[in-house]
Amino acid sequence: MTTPTATPPGNPFPPEIPALEQGDVLTRDEFERRYDAMPDLKKAELIEGVVHIPAAVRWHRHGSPHAILVTWMGTYCMATPGTDAGDNSSIRLDMENEPQPHAAMIIEPACGGQAQISSDDYVESAPELVAEVSASTVSIDLNAKLRVYLRNGVREYLVWRVRDKAVDWFVLKKGKYQPLRPDAAGVLRSKVFPGLWLDPEALVRRDRVKVNEVLQQGLASPEHAALVTKLQQQRDSKA
Image (cartoon, rainbow, N blue to C red; front, side, top):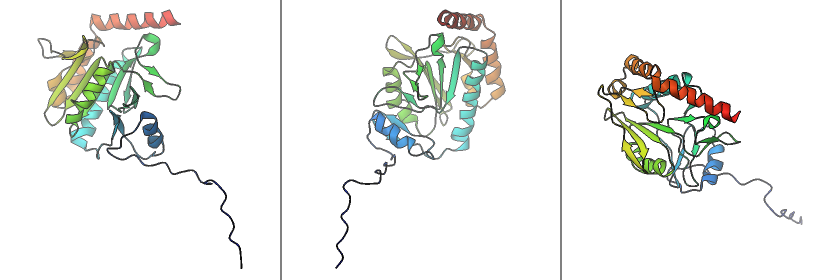
């Protein structure tokens, strides 16, 4: 009779990392651990400790609007040294919140910006501007996410409500988000990024030419020139 071999103590195989699931309640560290183990998962967010995984992305409701918004922000950054824009980057806000907004813009740390880039290449603390293209996610974007961005000091928050053909642009003022009001020509002008001008009517009708035309007017303004000078002085003072 053969005596069975005793099983060595301990598990010789590392435990399987559980997959992220919609509605999981996790710490930020555990969220990142599971997210890193799922390279095929393109987007997941942790909002108030709860995991949110978006549905498949449609062209007219999201993909095309997203491209317009990112192009608008990227064009501004190309004309404004000391700023930077990112697309779908995870942001470590606090221990229960790591959103992955559709777009965000920062003043670079070397130029006095409030966000930092961590040693493992995450944005930490609040970007100056966060933007969301909102179709099926309006309820969370204008409620839970808005509160999270407000609490963590995101200075401006833009939501393009695609189905409603509307744009909400909020500015942090005295601890609250106030709607950004258009000028006499109907143009929205960023308070944090002088020269970042937006014609919301042109945006919602996907008029790329008009969106760019109004942005170029902002980039030619004295306020934008003053910002470029200020950012360069900030960089020089830290060199």
